[in-house]
Length: 366
Ligand SMILES: Nc1ncnc2c1ncn2[C@@H]1O[C@H](COP(=O)(O)OP(=O)(O)OP(=O)(O)O)[C@@H](O)[C@H]1O
Ligand SMILES: CC(=O)N[C@H]1[C@@H]2OC[C@@H](O2)[C@@H](O)[C@@H]1O[C@H](C)C(=O)O
Image (cartoon, rainbow, N blue to C red; front, side, top):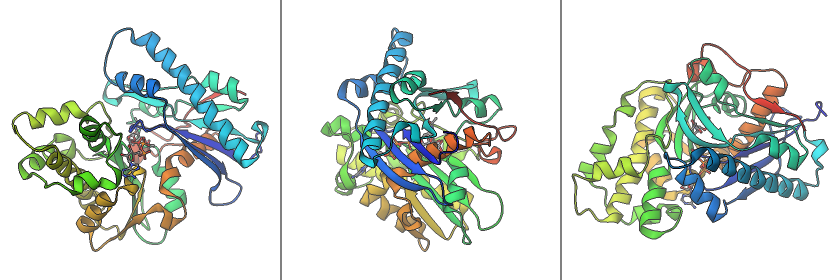
C-alpha cells in the first residue's frame, strides 16, 4: 500500500484538550481533508497526563500505562474517522502519531513524547510513524517546532506572511515571499489562561476569552511576566510546560497579593497576545498578513488583541488560506509521516538549529 496517498495525522498537544485526528489525501498539491475527529481525553487519562508533566512516584510504570491508554484512545479516534469517511485501514499508507509531550529539554539532549506506537499499529492495522522529534534533537536541534516545513508548502505565497499556532504553547512560522522560512516557539499560548480558568472555574478553558475580557489588565503583573528571559532569546528556541505552567505564574503573583482573579485572567490574555505580537515585530516585522491556527483562533478576545497590536497587518485564521485552524497540526503530522516514508526530511535546520536536514520518525509496520 505504499503508493496510497491517504494518511492520518494524530495530534494531542500541550493544551491537553484531547486528540485531533485527521484523514488526509495528498494526491493533489494541497492536502484534502477526508475526515476529522476531536476526542476529549477521558477524565482519568487527562488527570494522569497532567500529573505526569511533573516528576512523581513510580513514573516508569505510570508512563507505560498512560502510553497504552493513549494508544487505545488514538485507535478509537482512527476507527471513528475511517468509519465516517468510509475508508478501510488497508487504504491508508500510514498514521503520523505525534504522541503526548511529557518533557521537552533539548538543552539536556532529550524530548519525550509518549504513546505506544506498536499497540496503535496492532489495534488499527495501519503502519504508524512516531517519535518525530528525537532525531532533530540528536542532530543538535530543538526538536521543535516541526510544522514550519509543512506551513511553507501549504501557506507560503507571493506575499510575506506569518502563521501563528496558538495551542498550549504558541509558535510562529515566518514565510517571506523570497528567502528562508523561519520558525520558533514564541512562548505560552493558552496554557496559562487555561490553567488559571481551571483553578477558578473548574472548566478547561475560558470560552471566547469572555472571562478575561470582563477584567482589567494589571500593568505591574504584565511587566513581570513579559520580563521572562525566554523572550530575550533569539531563535532557534522552543519551550513547553517545563517552563510555562501555573507554578511560574504563582511565583510572579507572590509579590502582588490581593489581585482579583478576573484581573489576573485579563492580564494573562494581554500578556499572551503581547508576547506573540512582540516576537512578530522583532523577528518577522515585514509580514503583511498574519494567519492564526490552533484553538486560540476560537478565542475572540485573543483575536481582537492580536488585530489591535499587529495593525495595520491583516489578522485572520488559516481558514482564509484553505485549511481550518483546528486541523493544521494534525494534517502536519500526516504530512510528516509521508515525508518519513518517502525518505525525505521533515525538519528545517534553519528553524530547529539541527546540524542538517533529517528524516524524522520511527516506523512501526502494520
Ligand atoms: N471556544 C474557545 N474559546 C477560547 N479558547 C478556546 C476555545 N476552543 C479552544 N480553545 C483553546 O484552544 C486550546 C486547544 O488548542 P489546540 O488544540 O490548538 O492546542 P494543542 O494542540 O493541544 O497545543 P500545542 O499546539 O501547544 O501542542 C484549548 O485548551 C483552549 O485554550
Ligand atoms: C515539544 C512539543 O511538543 N512542542 C510542541 C508544542 O506545541 C506548540 C509548540 O510547543 C511546538 O513547538 C510543538 O508542536 C508543533 C506541532 C511543532 O512541532 O511544530
